[in-house]
Amino acid sequence: MEKRFNEKTISELAPLVKSKQISPVEIVRDVLEQIEKLNGELNAYIEVTADKAHRQAETAEAEILSGNYRGPLHGIPVAIKDNIYIANETTTMGSKIHRNFQPSYHATVVEKLSKAGAVFPGKLNLHEYAWGATNNNPHFGPVRNPWDTERISGGSSGGSGVATAAHMTIASLGTDTGGSIRIPSSFCGIVGLKPTHGLVSKYGCFPLAWSLDHIGPMTKTVEDAAYVLEAIAGYDPKDPTSIDAPTARYSTQLTESVKGVKIGIEPYFFDNVDAEVEKAVKNAISSLEREGAIVETVRIPTLQYAQYAEMITIISEASAIHHHNLVEREEDFGDDVRFLLKLGEIPSAVDYLQAQQIRLQLDREFMEIFNKVDVIITPTLPLLPPKIGQDTVLLNGKEVNFLDHIIRFTGPFNLTGLPAVTVPCGFAQGLPIGMQIVGPAFQEGKILNIADVFEKLHPELKQNPIVLKQ
Image 1 (cartoon, rainbow, N blue to C red):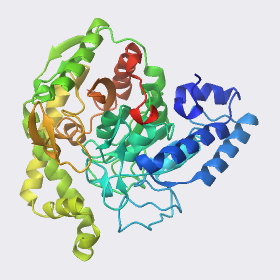
Image 2: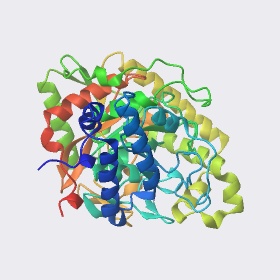
Image 3: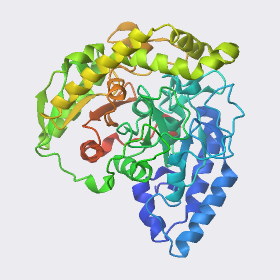
Image 4: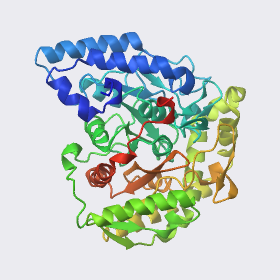
């Protein structure tokens, strides 16, 4: 049976749009119908801007018919996490305090997507202020995993992960401070890319922790992530953390070969991992070896302190940002976020600066490792998603606190700012498993290529979530 337009990828749709075989209006129609059908159950969107999306699609159609085709995102629906500003539209940050906030300007990434001709179907649910990994939002409700609606989506970009996996958009943007693109991408069975820190402007995105925050694409395929990154990457003087580094046409760097690529395996990333997750990731690495990649063991001693440094940094910076509202409107925060913000008032300047020393040492060690190997591969997450409302999860038969483990493998790459992509690599108990590929700074093409090769080797991993099979 022919797929509906909302089930297709950017790489499938773009040539059809360019050649005028299909219209952006048809794509938007299918996306909005899917949102109408599933959002009540999955709760991925906080706000659906259907009328606006129709108008944008009609404009795109007229431009394309007149010969003004802008590129692969022209007429393609891209949904936006609701902590990224769209001018004169409510941007809630998933919070009570900002429930009615309307920015007067676009985020830079929204400006860039608009220039590329993208269509915006709505704003996506998130963990309150992006400060959490479950997306159990007390103000807007939990986002439900489309593979098992009793389970969490992962956060904080849970709406982005679910909307993309359930074909309620063609692609989406998320933000990532400790893993918030990669966690829901892994749990929902899609591709999530955290670019190098400074490659994508954060101007017009409400901060969680300014030195750790990233914006990046969440997509159905690796090639789609490359197309979105091409549109949003680049230096922005309005963002003080933006870096004036060369960008690339990342989609042209997908060479379909990993022959001779050196993959580093750090045993730290396979310690205390769910047995089925470990098996899936190791099998994925073996399949890359069969394609000519070379696997080497590497050691990064300071990794054992990375989770401490990540947590001290994120809680301190987040509490500095929210300090005034914590004093003036404490009761308006959800219980979990209020607890974390109060916790962030405790570390001293000494604690914070010691964490930055760990960070610098980790930077040096990764730089040395990337002189020996091309990439490092890890499980994206060490465990499977718990049910909504559960604080614990079984890890190899032992009950553990979910939050103690959730950013063990993602957080180090927020600290270092290195690019990391998660790609589906298997299933356990009917739930998707993600493999994380990490590379040197500004080498997005390198990690995307390896992810693309793996994805194309294993088309059997491209499955629809259970909610779409009912």
